[in-house]
Structure formats: C-alpha cells, structure tokens
Length: 245
Ligand code: NAP
Image 1 (cartoon, rainbow, N blue to C red):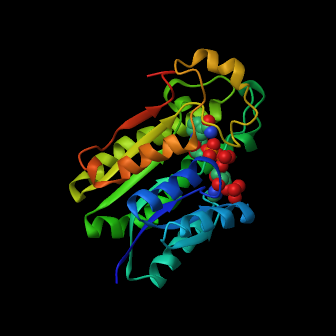
Image 2: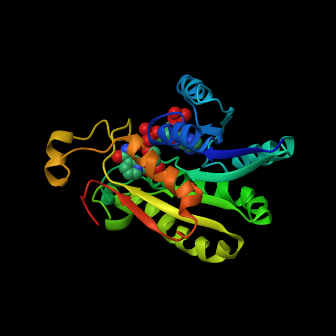
C-alpha cells in the first residue's frame, strides 16, 4: 500500500517539532524527521508522532552538507518505492548573531550554509519525483529578519531574504506541475533559538503583546500543506503578532 510522507528538517525541537507533530495529527502524514545532532530530543519527538498512529522515521543528517543530504534522501527514496513524499518543510536554521563589522567568515558561512543552502541540498534531490507525480507542497520557514532585515543578524537576514526570493522563483518554475512553494515568516516564537531574548522588553513592540508559540506556526504550515491551500503559491505568510506586515 502507498504511504504518504512529509519531511520536516530540524524537527527534533522547537518549531520543526510542532510542525511535524501537527502534520501527523491533523493531516495523518507519516513523518520523515530530520535533525542534526540531538538524538534524545529526536527520539522524544518520534514517540509523540507515533502516538498519532503514523510512522515516523528519523533521518539524521546535516542539511548544510550537500553530499550527506543528497545521499540520505536518495537512499530513503530507493528503499521506499511504495512511499510518496508529498510535503517538504525546510525548517532547519541557525543564527550566529553579531555586528557585521566584526562578523567572522565562519559565522557568515555557517548561517548561509544551513539556513539557505540547506533548502537547496534537501529540496533538489526530492523534486523530480514530486514533479513526476504532479502533486507537492514545499514550505520554507523564513523569518521576519528576511523581510525587514535585523541589526546584528546580517548573515541570517541575508539567508532568509534569499530563501524568500528562491521561494517565489521556484513557485513560478513548477506551478504547472501542481507543486506549490510558499514561505512562512515567523516573528518572535518561543523556542531554544529565542531563549536568550528579553521577552518582557521585546513584547512591548508586539501588538499582540507576547511571543508566539511553535504550535501556532505549526497550524499555519498544516494549512499550507493541506489540499485547502491548493491555489496559494509563491507567497510569504507572516506570523508575528502584528510586529511587522
Ligand atoms: P531551534 O529551537 O534552535 O531548533 C533548531 C532545529 O534545527 C533543531 O531540531 C536542530 O536539530 C535543527 N538543526 C539545526 N541545524 C541543523 C542542520 N545543519 N541540519 C539539520 N538540522 C539542523 O530553532 P527554532 O526556533 O525551532 O527555529 C526553527 C526555524 O524557524 C529556523 O529556520 C529559524 O530560523 C526559524 N525562525 C525561528 C524564530 C524564533 O523566534 N524561534 C523566528 C523566526 C524564524 P538538533 O536538535 O539536532 O540540534
């Protein structure tokens, strides 16, 4: 029997975890759970997803590594000819904040390699089968920083801004094959990435007066991944409590 899968990168923790759990619970997708290093967190998330009655396979690889990404994904597709990957959520991303004047080349390169190039490394090897089957959803998790730019995050803003442009361009290339490509741009969301931020101070600038929850981003991604979003492509949808729109 054919099994339908959704791949979520960086899904061991935070926003990716919430997205993966909701794709399982709300759309009944089997999940390919990618992560980089945190085995315990990935195993815990796998248990949560399996409790929804779907399959969840752990695919540990570094999205910034082109060969590792391509090889792992191609081997999975080869070993699972009866399985269809319908949804790709490019969520894995990192920050290495600092003022541009003193930014080290390694901090520039690691952010670009993970938060931008990871999209290329993961999506390209999987795209051919999606196009052949004439159905698919590609959802890129970007950021408010990629829309407005953020001081102290020139590397991250560049990566997310480029990913927004890539989303729009790819949507135009492959729309005829009924594969949609959209981006979700969160503002401040409670997770390990935002743990150091001063919520009390920052929320003064957020009209809804709080950080968002990973589950709220998950709900938006589930909508875009569903059949209900069939006529939306090339869009960037903000989820930021009114901070910027
Ligand atoms: P997080 O809590 O730091 O979690 C990051 C996840 O990405 C973890 O599962 C981590 O795996 C994985 N990861 C990191 N580098 C990876 C790599 N090279 N290859 C594969 N997996 C990798 O981050 P988050 O807050 O959930 O953020 C998720 C996405 O939302 C990111 O793209 C981020 O830029 C974006 N975003 C977040 C916020 C926010 O306020 N939190 C706002 C806007 C946008 P391990 O567990 O193995 O380390």
